[in-house]
Length: 172
Image 1 (tube, one colour):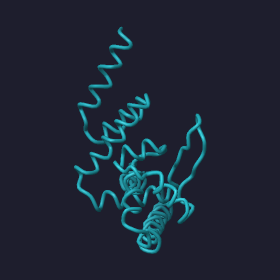
Image 2 (cartoon, one colour):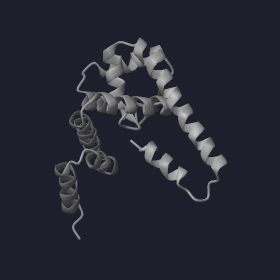
Image 3 (cartoon, one colour):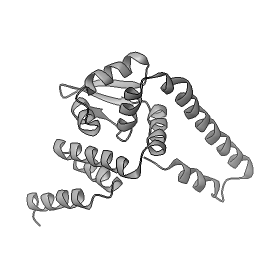
Image 4 (cartoon, helix red, strand yellow):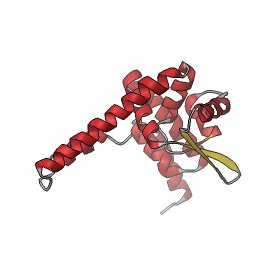
């Protein structure tokens, strides 16, 4: 997850921004936080807990398919949870790619779900989700994304495995 607080602080410390611009940036940040709070209180809290947790777990990835959703969340019923999320609101984009359905959480929802995930669960649990996502990307052959996920969860094992496998496939 991009650390928007860090980016926000960097913007505020930018010497090229005058005080008026900095005030506008502060107002934008407050509005964003208010919107995420609104989603959390008036939308997500109306859903059952399983649906909330499922979408929180998936918020760590940009794009996913059914198989990845199952691998990250460890839920066999991921397909029905995706379908239910589509029925309760316009929060998931869907398209076909290489004969399979691909999904993406809309950005405001994704960011607010990431915020919830980080606030509700232990760092170890979140690391496990990132590891699961890294494993899924690795199985799909998407090495760049797998490395990002393994880096996010500090998995030296996952990173080493990919690098060693890459060296075997592409010797110097």
